[in-house]
Image 1 (tube, rainbow, N blue to C red):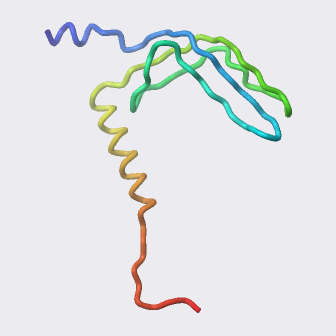
Image 2 (tube, rainbow, N blue to C red):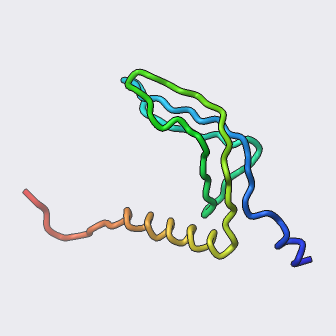
Image 3 (cartoon, helix red, strand yellow):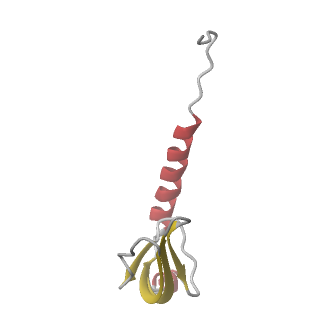
Length: 100
């Protein structure tokens, strides 16, 4: 049974839609993967994506992407690092004096 769990491919090639826009209203780059969900620690490499878009332009292109799944240890490490980075935002000072 454990052997069958390890036999699952760690890297998968999927099709994706890349949407890149640079305009007065929006500056974004979105990637929508077809039929796959990405989890913590997974990496996605998009092949042949539009990397340069002039001002006022929007490009939408179908590309291929290579999704590499993280192992359980990498997922745990990524979740822990994200939690610790988030707690840095919680730094609050309770002091008895006030600034004028």
